[in-house]
Amino acid sequence: MTRRIGKLLLWLVIADLAATLLFWGATRLSDQTGKASGGLGVVFYTDNAADASARIDKGISLLKKKKVDRLLMVGGHRPQDGRLGSQEMALLAARRSGLSGRISADVESRDTISGLSNLAKRADTLESGKIVFISNCMHVLRAKAIYSSHKGKQPKALGACPSGGYNPLDIWRRAHYEAAAWALFLLPEGARDAIIDTLRGDEN
Image (cartoon, rainbow, N blue to C red; front, side, top):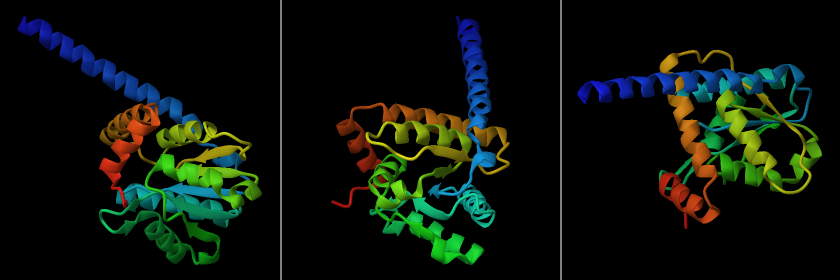
């Protein structure tokens, strides 16, 4: 019996690692940096300092190469901590690039879902004509799905992923985070909002 359980656990681990590798490989196709040609670059907040730095550098690179016209940082509003993550990233990007006039932040969005909801309501989103999501490729895939779920005519969104990020443990962690985030997105809105309020804080 013990040997059976051991074999089952081993096969579950192997299946998990295989699924993670397949998911990671498939999402690499989300990187469309070469197709970017102007419009609004949307950089998603993360509380992982290394990931945040890589996303900021990717956004700055696109901005300087004129592959995007402006950068908008979204997410990271943490009322329970008194933090505005998107604003912190915008300030860092402005210092690194010297292009503060072309970098702004959505200080109300807490996460990908609310960030994209706010994005869909912004007049400058429609005016931009093009949008480039800047994040790791696994996240970009989910962001595109959420973005496309909004009603109304929105500019087409491309994805641009920072280079690197080949640490196996980090890939495994990201893949499982994304699996949980997909499950959250698919929940009924009321249940989803209640969970997000608990995880991210509710200023009300």
